[in-house]
Image 1: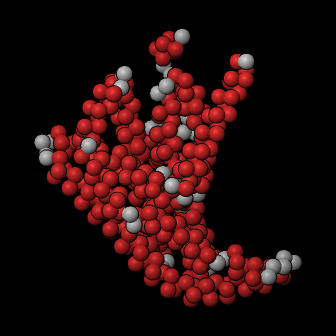
Image 2 (image 1 turned 30 degrees about the horizontal axis):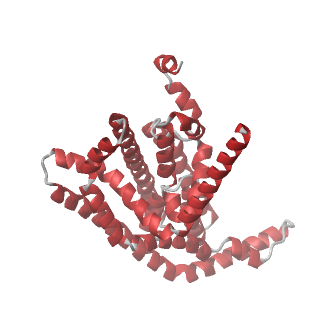
Image 3 (image 1 turned 120 degrees about the vertical axis):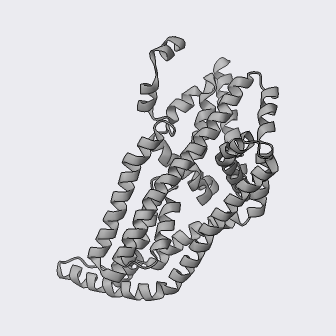
Length: 354
């Protein structure tokens, strides 16, 4: 009997998860803007509390924060949309040059016994398709952001209720101190992640803009902004950002320039991903490399490009919540970077566990 009961519980839990995920998938158009609003609030929460501590009225504090959000969003989107429009008008010319280059490459390969059709070459080296994928990703994100009024209203109300939420959670919780500690941990972790990720994305984008400008590659600011934004997508974001620039360098200056651009992106992303980000983040991320990649796939499938951008903070939030309960700590352990977590265990922790 106990075995049957346990099996039934597992089946019911699995069925509930499937139903919830199906509901989230169908409600993506509503949930994505809501998640964006929640994460913007988590990022801006420390600034809001700091302004309140300085005796600034809550209405004025919210106005200042919302103005900063709108200004930054309008600045990035206007530059990006204008640059993408100008670049898209030049794609036919670039594609013609690319066909000439690939035809010459095919002739060279034919001489050494490797036979490929021009159609296969142009399908591989198709700048329009590559930028179409990048453009569709940004269009999906911008399409979600067209609900800007809904997102901003949610952010305004969440910021205004920020202090009262703290008191409400304390009142309804059996352990108010632990509850507040968990909420502050989630907010601080997300805010720290986006702060560091923004810094490293800027450190990646600025050298790319400068070097591409020196090399004479068209639209260097566009590629810098694309590198900045796609750097928030773990693992594959930097690869997606590099491909169109490499093809453009190939079209403009040939294979040597394309190799130099590829080397530039490889060096920048390795420097930031393997040295700068781990040093700055420390254990604030605390996720294994495999989990980061799987979370990218899962949240990308569930919520589209918005889920890809938010995959790491969503998984970190889930990990923190699971780590706060004894019955679910095993799930947090599976998600964590095992080496860093083991190194963080002190003798006092071991004594408490025993």
